[in-house]
Amino acid sequence: MKKVILSVAVIAVLGLVSCKNETKREAESTQTEMAGDVALTELSFGVRGNCGMCKNTIEKAVNAVEGVAKADWDVNKKKIDVAFDGSKTDAMAIHKAIAASGYDTEKVAGSEEAYKNLPGCCQYDHAMEMNQSGENAAESHDEHHM
Ligand SMILES: [Cu+2]
Image (tube, rainbow, N blue to C red; front, side, top):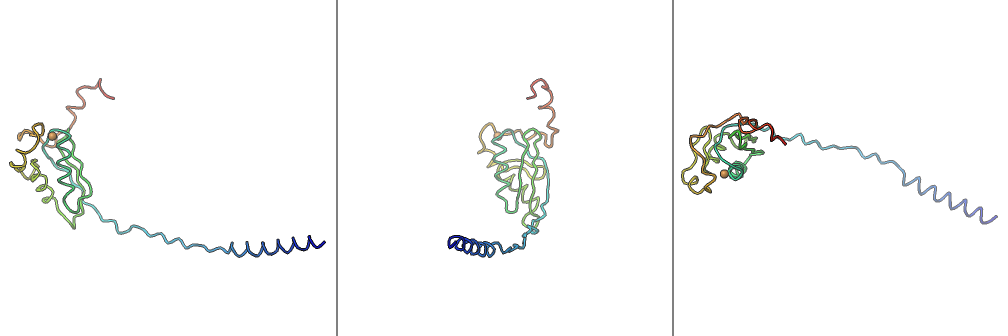
């Protein structure tokens, strides 16, 4: 009989404890929204170049400009897509950065000095057409797709 009373007491105590623990504290969901996301300016323009190494050089030059969020040069189209924070930089600063790395853009001729220091395969033709469709190279050999 004693045992029964004891176990009832134990259960009662446990019950109390667990009740205490379960006091629901509804964490108010304070979802800090990243509302401060800056609106980026997107821009595409022609840039001459030959190959994957050119791509690295050009994109590196653009990414080094403060405020640039994206730089993607297309080797087939001879064109770059950039996105930047317009409060930190502007299109001309990006053209100049590319030109300083040795590459011609639609607006600024590439630095001759930097051009001379480019690897031989990267010394593109200054008469090269910019902003190409990019389709000639890719679609003339349909059989080779994937
Ligand atoms: Cu190259």
